[in-house]
Length: 271
Image (cartoon, rainbow, N blue to C red; front, side, top):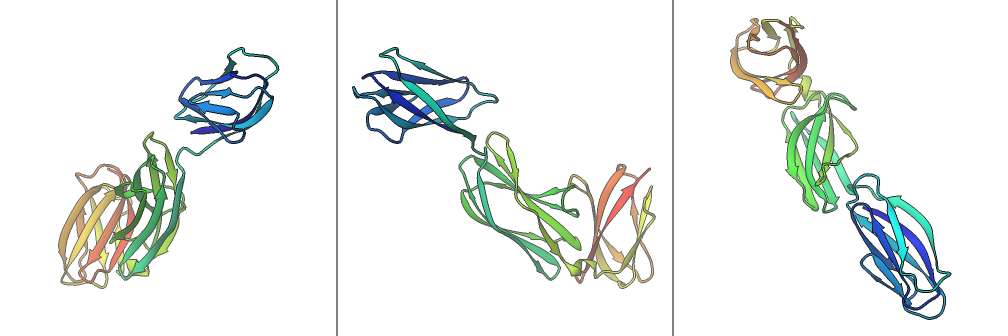
């Protein structure tokens, strides 16, 4: 949406200004003198004496560079129009508050409230191990104007970064600020992985686990789960993970034991 203001000065009764735009829909609003009547994209002077008024011009859904033209119906002479200001409103005005994260034992809770304009269509919660890159989608929401949200991240990193992505009906994207959450429980599981980079097989050694079930997940950098398996670990023996069907690339390995102790490591697969 684009708004700008003009001052019109009339000298003759029934003279009319016509505002047109090369894209979008142009409408006028009269803020001052009652001697001017705004209807759609026209404004008409109804008095016989010279007077001026402040007019707001609004264009909804302009496409790219937009040109405006003003014409006159030719009644009388000496009338003037002056441009006061011109500004472009953000395509997606969003107010996000109370965006925060809480560490709860072995998981993180992400909470936020939003107040959105009606153009906002989608909200995406994203997560990364970095503050300013490599964010991956955690959950996708249909936007509501006034809503409280809560998300439980059961696989936190030792340090996790979260942000919100807002998408409007025109495909425009706006991001919230980024929050950081430290979860010390994510490193309770003492471990060693090798080799890294790995080719056909990856070994995971857990120094403080024996005779218990271990959950193993391998996640690619698009956030897709490519491997998930549960194994029984024996004392002093490493876990073997076959990589023959895993494409080359960078992955996140997430391992959790039966006591909900866990760790996360980056693994490079190179065949």
